[in-house]
Amino acid sequence: MAAETVCDFPGCGGVGEIVSRLSPEGYLVATGKKAYSFREAYRRFHYCQNCHDQLMGGVWSRVRKPDDKKDGHVAPTAI
Image (cartoon, rainbow, N blue to C red; front, side, top):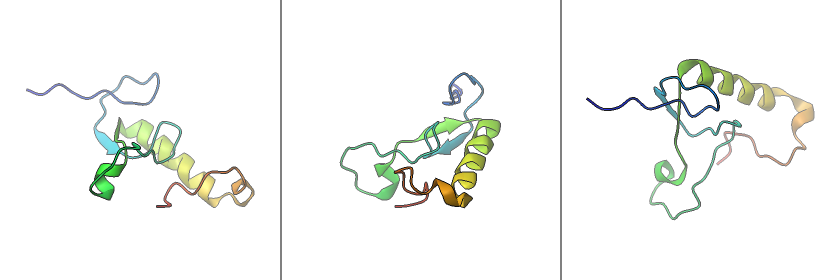
């Protein structure tokens, strides 16, 4: 039987059942290595359902907030 993956959100320790490209800060993170496809180009994180829901909530609140567009970060969905 395979070992369970631990949630990558700091301090959680739950089972990381969801694979995501969002970092614990809520941004897409590139590996910096040469990749053959988009799928390989971004680092993967594992999150429990609760932590993933919190991250996604933060992403959407940043995207919808008009006064937060000058922070130097591209939209989390930008490619």
